Image 1 (tube, helix red, strand yellow):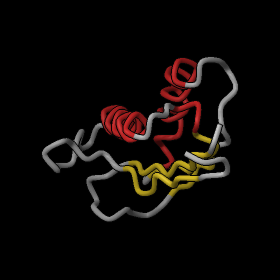
Image 2: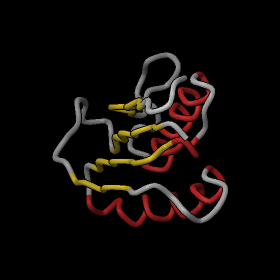
Image 3: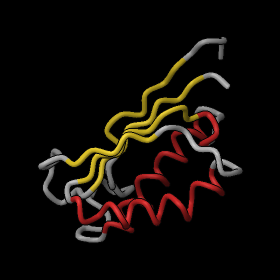
Image 4: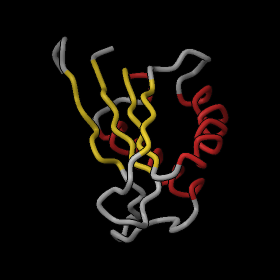
Length: 112
């Protein structure tokens, strides 16, 4: 890839390999599915989470903010190999495309 490229991983939702909604009603399971899928997409590009330069996370319930914060604190140090993470905008939305989705994540990936 040439210098200066950018990818947008938009609309990452908890979609299982068979196309079904993963973890219906389970925020932690949906978080794991979304970030697992993102890991697969990044790997397909020959990249990893260290190439992510910004996240936007959309939650459907403000009550899940502590869950999101806890999961982020648990996984991000491993994924980003340290304690410096990209900026993360956190939004509360009324509903994504399907009501079963509890979380949607958009990532901006840039040249290292």
